[in-house]
Image 1 (cartoon, rainbow, N blue to C red):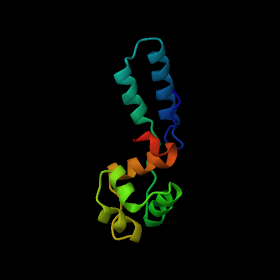
Image 2 (cartoon, rainbow, N blue to C red):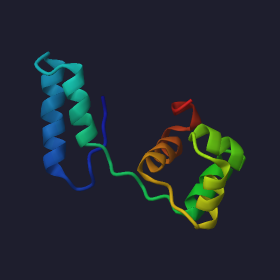
Image 3 (tube, rainbow, N blue to C red):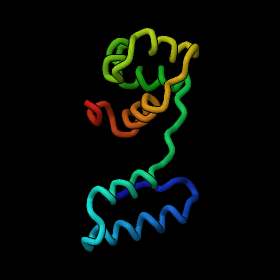
Image 4 (tube, one colour):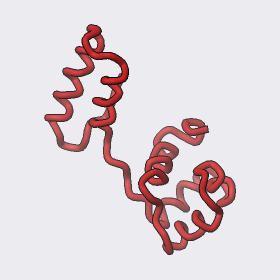
Amino acid sequence: MTIKTKAGSRVFEAVHETAADLHRLGFIDKRKMSQYDALCLEPVHDYDAAKVKALRERLRLSQAVLASVLNTSLSTVRKWEVGDKRPSGPSQRLLDIIARKGLEAIL
């Protein structure tokens, strides 16, 4: 499994590489390995109004469809796009997954 480590962190990279080797050899179970993976994930990008709108337009989605995919309201997506609100942590993570892996990753 290839995981991107936090920017500039050789410590996280070394820990993850060691854990991956131990997992491959059977000393670390799948659950514990997923915890190491989570530790070494890249931080989520901050999604402001322009980025949310650009992502939605790139995917050719209406605001209503994006709201449905993210399990939020249409008014929330509208407020994100005009800058009245910003996506919270879980929404930021979902937007980041969609941006990196495509809409199919969360459907």
